[in-house]
Structure formats: C-alpha cells, structure tokens
Image (cartoon, rainbow, N blue to C red; front, side, top):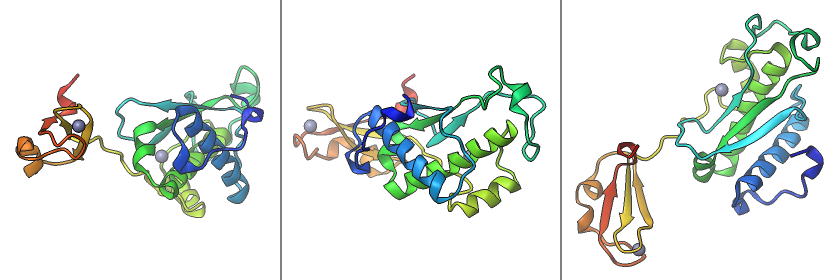
Length: 197
Ligand SMILES: [Zn+2]
Ligand SMILES: [Zn+2]
C-alpha cells in the first residue's frame, strides 16, 4: 500500500478489518513522526497484521546486517542493494489490537517507531540504554506489554460462541457446566487453546 492510498482513516474504535488497522496505525505513525520528531522515513516501512497467537503486541522485522551496531551509523549506499534505506516490516498483532485501548496501542506504535528509527540509522536495533532514553523522550513504554493469550476459553455449548476468557484457573474453569451463557442460556464448555495444536 503506497502512502497516497491512505484516505481519511477510520476512528480507532471503528476499525474492523486488517486493512483498517494498518491504515489507522500508519496514519497515527505519520502524525507521531511529526509530533515527536522521529528521524523515520515511513515510505520504506511495510505493514502486516498477524493473527497468529503471539505474545508480542507488535514487532518490527528487519533484515540483519552482521557489521551493524546501535550507535554506529550505517552507510546504506554500501549496505543495501538499492543504496537506499531498506524496507522493514511493522507486524501488528490483531488480537493485541482487540484488547488494547487506543492510548496503549498508540504508545505501542511509538515503541516500534523507536525500533524503526534505530534500524534506519544503524541497521540494527535493540533494547539498550539508547533505546530507553529515546522511548522515554517519545512517551513510549520501554517494554511493550506482553500480550498473553488466555489459557482457557469458555464457549457456549449451544451456539459455540466464545463467552469468556480466563488467564488462570478459577471456579468458572473448573465447573463450566454450572454456568449459563447469556446468549443462549446454555451451559458452558471450557477449552484450553494451548492444547490445540
Ligand atoms: Zn521493542
Ligand atoms: Zn450461545
């Protein structure tokens, strides 16, 4: 998707598709680059939405350069085939987006923009002291909150919809048949997604 393809982004709470999530996130990043004065070129940044059960809310995937190090400016003219800043990919977790409020999602994107900024300058990125200082300066978390998939999923035995998620064992998990779903007034069943491979 080229930058020009971006029309007016939808409101965060109205995002329903992967394309809309990318459009919203990309538009937010364009504003953040201005506002927080990131030395980032968004043009070579590629975007993807991951639906795989990942624990990270977002990640920047970059090519690896053996001689690159954070703090040492990399000369792209001799390091990338095009002589230009090579692409890196912003990978967004759909499930994290679903569980994050707008402000936390925006802060997550700023964290990832620090990685992009480091990568575009040095060809490498990490979570070292320079990263920490930069993250503080742009009001981004040093570590993005780990997004944990629920250990237990309670489903309605009638319609099959997900009714509740639990991250640890509890009464609901131990005795799902003692509860009724609000959708169908049916009993619940409990599955452990981790067991399904
Ligand atoms: Zn990070
Ligand atoms: Zn139901």
